[in-house]
Each structure stands twice: as structure tokens, then as C-alpha cells.
Length: 195
Image (cartoon, rainbow, N blue to C red):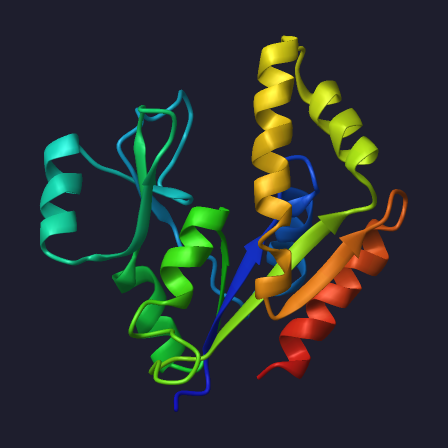
């Protein structure tokens, strides 16, 4: 088995994943944070540090060629995918690769032949970030942007579906309001312990 591993960070929107990932990036230059491939247009001033910007045709060809570990389409809009070439080589060199994924990505990766628990070739650690409470998460979602009652209801349904997946992950960490440093330390501890 290689000494590296893939760590998936999962959790509902508004739970603090992006802040946790930014802290991990800042504090752990030894970790690898792979880029996503996407068909969405490049935004003004956006470089190539977070995304491979590709055409719809190239994305479709890469799918046919089996270049993706997982992929998703967001609300019938742009497609996003995790390239195996961004994940496997660093693991084989002994690095810890950190990737934020949605529940769909988690479901795909944990059964992928390269990462499945018993027969997979590479170690996989899955960490679910839990909110302090549903009401806390609703507050965070509402503060991000104004939305209709229908949009809020849709997001709540999605959030509950995501939270139902938490018990299937290796580690669950609750992000308590005002306790971000402790949450980050717990994520770091889980990564250190498991590998």
C-alpha cells in the first residue's frame, strides 16, 4: 500500500468546509489540494490554480476515456469532475491529498475500485463536517444570500439528505459556533491518526 492517502471533506452547504479547507491549505503545505476540471467559464482574474477549464467536448471525451474519479453536473449547468491524474500520482509519492466533495462525489469515490474500503488500492479517509444544529445552518445559509421560501425549502431538503450520509463516513466532526479553531484541530487530528 502506498503511504499517501485521499481525504474527503464532506458536509452540507454553510457548515464551514471552505474555511476549514483554507486553514488546511495555509497550515499544511505538505498536503495536496487537487484542481477540479470544469466546463464553467473562467471568471475575470481567475487563474489555473483551482480549476482546469475545459470545453464541453473535452469534458465528454475525458469521461469516455475514464479520466475522472467522479463528476457531477450542477443544476443542469456546468459540469465538474475530479481527475485521477490529480489524485493518484501524489498518493503514490506518499502525499495526503485533500478534496472537498458533495454527497454524490462521496458515494462515487467510496465504491470506486481504487478506493473501496476492502479491495481498494489506495487508502481513503472520509470526514463529515456536521453543523451545531439545523437552525444554525439555516442562519448561515440565509446570511449568505437572500432567497425565496421555495429555495430555502429546497436547500433544507438537500441538507437533510446530506446529513443522512454522515454515519457512513469514517469521522464526523461538529463545527460548533465560535469553535472553528477546535474544529480545524480535530480535522488535523483525524488526518494524522488515520494514516
